[in-house]
Length: 429
Image 1 (cartoon, rainbow, N blue to C red):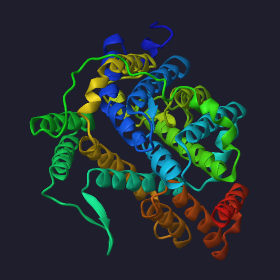
Image 2: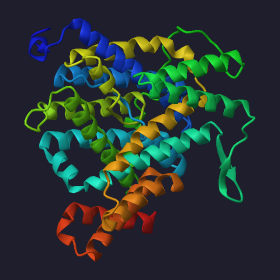
Image 3: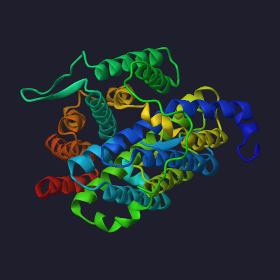
Image 4: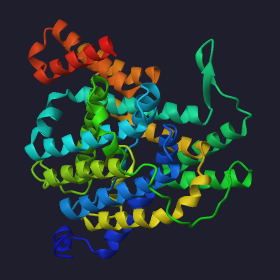
């Protein structure tokens, strides 16, 4: 085991890797409760989604640890789950079963692109500024969803949105949770989001805002969601679903690439500006998406929270094996779903939004030809309540501003193709 995971070369040991794996799990354990909360808005069974989330995370993380040997954990991605529920199912009116088929298709395409090496070419075709804008825009969208679900922000006939009732117990609980989580994160506590949810859930119980049905229980059945991606696979061959699948692909592309580079760099695993076994890592990520779609959850991707484990010393894939084990163990804690209400998960969504918006600093706002499409990408996601629409608008404006600025040579042919696809999307859909 030590030889396979190269403990000696990496200067690590079982204890360090175990603590790293546990730390990573605690830093991202919130997804076990946030993901069912988000996908239940799409009409999916929260118990089944809980089980699917844990299985997808365990399998994906195990693949990453054993095949790629990286201390990187995977789980259904934030932003992608919101896109699945609010943009695809609620916004477009696509049944969640068909949306799962779209996730399966994107995972299969991802595998093909990874094995053929085309993935890197597609990634390189998208301007760095637009990649950053997509990440930041998703962050704003997630935060908006959190504020809305906690009723901190509500609908208003005159101004579209307005501040909610600050005397409401739900609003007060969410604000309390947000303050606690902000304090924990500001103190540098790695699992601050998770601990914030735990403290908020306890306060929720004390004041009668949620029910306690125990801690340990039987594993919720996967029957409501298992295999639905296969049953409805024939429904994905439409222009509308093509846009959905492209969005799943696009976001997962850059989510994974950014996380791999960030975590590997922090762990000192990058050599000559290259990531060893990158192909294996990308395969693990795409295979996890396929597994997740089959059991019943949105796109599974690498989590940047893995840096928490690396921060305490994790250097090898054994840490990921440990994290995967904890996700399997978590299957027996489903009764806690009744405690984790929208008010409890909202602070997690808002803080994740904050973290994702840090990408804005890397955009050159002095370059007007770049700033316009980047700004519209970020802005239109929350305003149109659609991640896909934000991406479409930004990608339409990018060739326009660059051509007018006489910088046609900087535009990759792929961007022209996306321009045509998204224009057709608005015309016909």
